[in-house]
Image 1 (cartoon, rainbow, N blue to C red):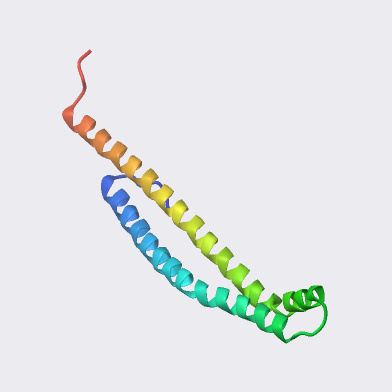
Image 2: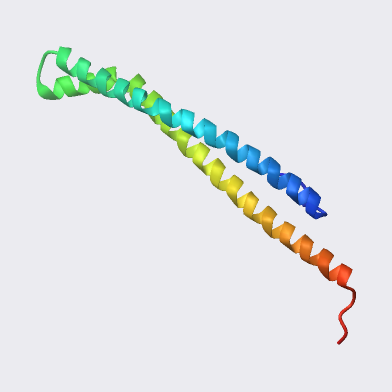
Length: 121
């Protein structure tokens, strides 16, 4: 995390950097989401192919299919976790952006107050 900005220019630079990070994280999230359907298809197909090619009772076929599809299902679950982590990261960046805007607003107000001189009581 960056140091607290001391003036509106520093705050604007921090907000610009955060905006760039949000853009990069969003692009990565889109890529991850684009890859998800293929992983889901692979997991389902792996299960179905194993189930249909195994002989024996229904329960035996189900268990064999679960075991044979485990790697594909694991890849799918890991990918889903990556998507969730990316979404969490984006939420954090948006929070940082809101905090930066609030700090920037306060800095500008302090400058206006300082430039207007002391207020008579």
